[in-house]
Image 1 (cartoon, one colour):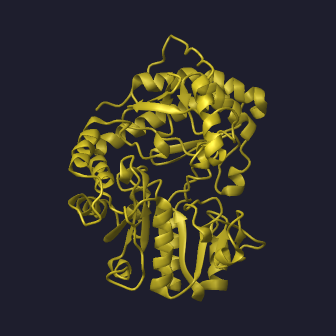
Image 2: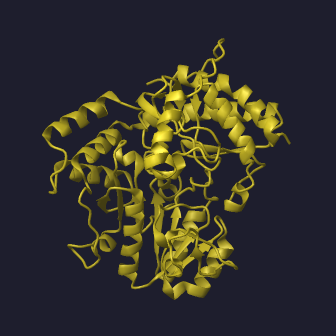
Image 3: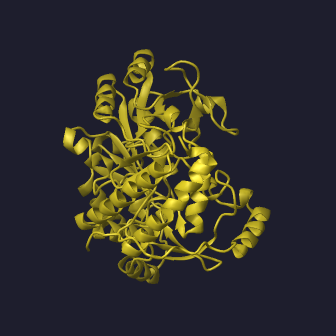
Length: 452
C-alpha cells in the first residue's frame, strides 16, 4: 500500500444539490425519535441544516439517500480504520453470520480478539462489553470494588460515555466535588466525582491532597478527543500514573477513541510504552469492533481477577463478546499493520498542512492538533491545552466552514469539538477532493467572522 501523493485536481467540485430525500427522512425521524437521531452528535444542531442520511459507504466515500458522494472524514467517529466495506472484513463477517449471530456462550473469536488486544497493549486480561459507555462504567465499578474507595477524579472536557457519575461539570475551586452536568442525573450520582482542568498538575496535586485516601481511581482520555484533539502535555500521563500509585488509587486510561487508532498500540504506544509506565485499567472501543457494537476494558491481572465469576464485582452483558462483532474487530486488527498506520499518517499530514495553509491565506485564526493519526482544527489561536482553551473556538466560523466543505463533497464532523479521522482507504482522489474544497471553505469561515 503506497502513501497518498494527493495531487491537486484541475477540476472544481460541483456543489451538491439540495438534500430532498434526507430532509424527508429527517422529518419522519423527528416524529418518532427525539431530535430525529439516535445519538446527539449525528444531528446538525451545532452547524445548522439537515443531517445527511447515508445509504451506503465504500472505502473513503459515503453516499447519501439523495445520491451525493462525500469524502468521509469521520469514519463512523473512528472505527473504520481500513475504510468502509473492506473486502476481507466483509468476507469474515459474512462467514461468521452464516454460522449464527449470537449464542450466549463462549466463542473462539472472543478469545482470539482478547489475545490480540493483550499482545498490543499493556493490559493482561480483558472483558468485553457492547459499548464504550459500558466499558468505562464497568471500569469505574471495578476500581471502586478493588480499592474499597468511592471518589473518582476526571477532567473537564474528557468524555467517558454517558455514565451518570462521569456526566459532571466542575464546581467552584480546583478540587470541589462535582454537580450534575445534565438533567436526569441526580447530585448523588456525581457527588463523589471530582472534575479538574486537563493538563493541570497543580490541580491534580490539590485534589489528591484533599481526597487522596478516598480516591478509587483517576480516569482520563489517553489523549483528549471529545473537546477536539487535545493531547496530554509531555509527561502528564506519566505523572498521573505515578500520583495514583503513590496514593493507592487506580489509573484508568480511556482509549475508546485512541485505542488502535492513534497508533497500533493506541496512545499508550506514544507515551507509556516509551516512558515505561502502564495504566492499571484501560477501556477500548471503536476500532476494536471493526464497525460493530463492541468495546472492552482490561488491565492488571489482579485487578481484573476481582470481576465475577472469579471475584465479587458483578458485570455482565447478553451480547458482550458477540461473535460477529469480535470477528469484525479481530479481522480489522490483524489487517492493521505498520503500513496501514503509515498510510493514514501520511494522508493526515497532507490534509493538516493544507487546512492550515488555506485558513492562513484567509487570515482565519486557527490551530491544528494531533494525537497520532487523529487530529482536529480549532478556529482559535493555539495551543489548546484544556477545555477552557477549546471553548474559545469560533463555532460560527466552523459552521460556515463545515457547510462549504459539505457542498464540495467533504463530510466533516458536524461539531467544532470533534476529531477528524482518516482511513487506509483515503487515496489520491479522496485527498484531492478535500484539498480542492479547502480554499472556498476558508473564505466562508473568514466571512462568518473567523478572520483575525
